Length: 486
Image (cartoon, rainbow, N blue to C red; front, side, top):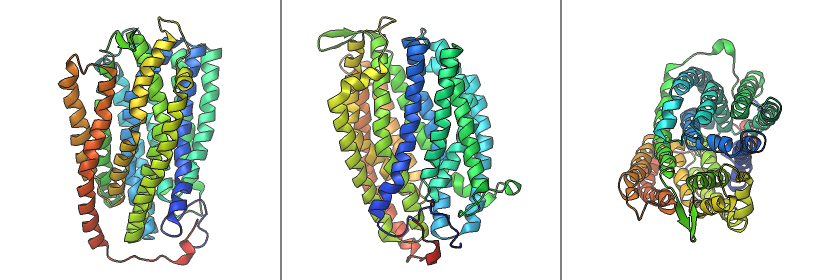
């Protein structure tokens, strides 16, 4: 590749990787935070100008299911990220372009299949989750509209993952800022002016996803100076690259699905806790759900800060794996862990000090029998437990992404399915049914308990796989200096 390579594509195999890790991950972090911010605006809009608390809860009740969808799609796109990272690290431009064209077709066709299935299964999915009758109609309306945008969401996710693989974490952020701003504008128009409530919020989301998909496709098509470029006439599924992507993406997708299914079950189990007592105050079911939904929104921001380092590690490990640099691969892992712990400490402290005003942002309507102070109590119980153990989740995600960066996607999938999904489902089927464990505290304690178990298993697995892969890759292949960027 020539010196025309643009500076937005950061080389992750040279220089001070500790500083580069932060520079690369901050846009990743901000991308997720902006996504959450737009979701927050969705909830705030319907709460204050739409159907009030019920509409907000209806959208919030879809949170676990929508998170499942996003995690699965992003996990599938991980295959494209790893493959292009390794191709760039080894300076194989032809293979990288084959991966690019194959990935966009996977996203397009896969999105259509997911979207159609989801649209027709939406009511059944919400019933399985034991969604309360008072909100199920609104929840179904929102979820069906959301599924209509799945093909667009997949195209953006695959495009964003490939940009990050090339060392460009800023472009997905810029695209999201533009599409998110449009989302906010249409939120206000549809909900305030046209009184469309949850339907308006759903339509605004789909429109913003369309803008994001168009922008990421246009960028790859018109970016003539990058490592790869999208050419519509070359759109073709290349068998070798398809298998490489699926070999990593499918286990990652299965892992994401298996990881989120218990979360959906935990969300539905929350509806079985009624008239819960906290500090001598009896909390109603609506207050429990409202408080939990508010806590989940805050947790999302904390998770965005710590998980970004796991996502960023895939690109660092992948590029250095392609370049055969064992030292930098190890450095990338420990730098990711270090930065994650720093950001977790900051975010956990903020939640401890400001939990009440933070929860109040999402519990702003005292109608429909919801007492704000009671909902805050319910939200605090979940928030404290989750936020102060989130570093365990961050470390777990880093371990899984590290192995994926080494092109090993099946071991993390197996470990997660057994360690996270298995233990949580077992808890719900056994202990949670007893009176002592049938509480908000124990319901959400299932998360940190499973994180601890999985991290214990990861330690020997990583050491064994790392040793085996390092023996295979040999010595570092140094790239032509003109390709070093950033």
